[in-house]
Amino acid sequence: MALGALISAYQDAGSGIELRATLPLAGRTLLEYQARLAAAAGASSIVVLVERMPASLVAAVDRLNAERVAVSLARNVEEAADHFEAGDQILVIAGGLFADAASIDLIVSAEGPAILTLAENIGLDGFERIDSASRWGGLAIATGQQLDEVAAMLGDWDLQSTLLRRLVEDGARQLAAGTGSAAPLLLMADGARDLDDAERRIVASARGTRSDWVERYVTPIVEELSVERLMRTAVRPSGLLAGALGLIGLATLFFAKGWLGAALAALVVAVPLDGIAERLAALRMQPLARGNRLRALLPLATGAALAALAARLAYDGAGWGCVVTAASALAFFHASSIEKAGARIDLPAWLASRKGCTLLAIPFAVTGQWTAGLVAIALYAGGSFLGLQHRARASPEGLAAH
Image (cartoon, rainbow, N blue to C red; front, side, top):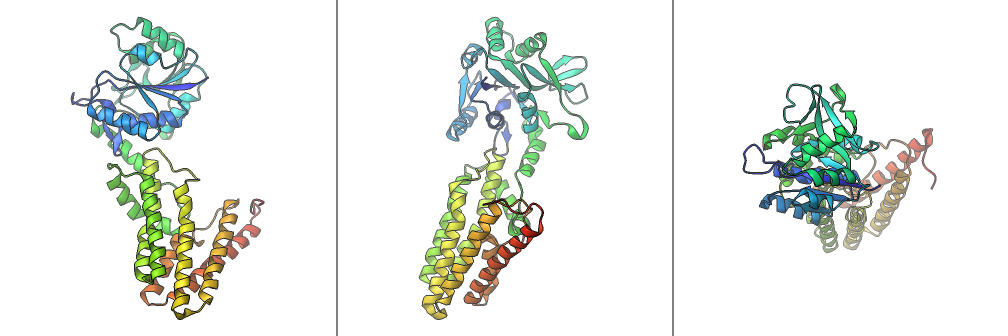
């Protein structure tokens, strides 16, 4: 049974100038956030019901389609119903609703038609009343047949309210939202300020987990400040990853030319870029895939830069032992990456990484001890590999078999 989504985008905001659907949220619009929530829940067909098409709404839909979140527009209920089959499950999202992912998961997991409800309380005037004790939480599951039947008899009535009443009359399951610490984040926005708290929650949730000491203690401030400035721009996470890859490639060229200081500067600038990209992608509800090609190339490109540094030092008279040292470091990094991929233990933050080794090289570069810096990187990589092996053997979980 296919899952689709129907998003109402025809309600005016309190100002009467813009639509609730186009209220700004984390650098995009509320409609884009709703559509991405629906897509993340598995909706294969997302239909946005509109009456007028301001430029901001058109731009939001264009961005969604460009980012592979397929959205269709319907100017009336009949057009909306044509996008669904009678047996489809339809996730109904109220106009102006901000909902967290947990609420979406709750309603989507219901078997058959369902309504998310809120207990009657002060401050819920924006949510439509169901009865004296409860209000509609803005999320529901209807069937394609129910939508067809409502479309056939709607007339001048409001689709959102009429469909809600039809679900209630048909005995749709009512799912009560949690209360207290388990209460979901549900907001019915009528103006931009209504979404301030939601935006703060989204930015906070985009921080993600950090397993590397550089990402935990050095770059978070840079990442957060950058994301706050970039979230309202057209900058894409893939562009940041490409920029990081380009800087590392430039560093490789600079090392080969003998411009060691400029090369290290390029590597340092590249250090926070993938973290910024990851946060920005999470903020826009498009998390970077684990196997993202650009991100996967970053360690390989950094390895090439390290090899170029070693070759340059050897050429300049430091001896071919530099090449052996760099090769040893790269071998330890490769072995560690294999072990990390199969680890069943919590990995310590101090393990060697490309970012950690980049920062480790700074004091040696400042004092002109490039060869000593190369040796330090190799020792760090080797010590991390041995430490990982020791922790794995000491842990009952150990490492996964390879």
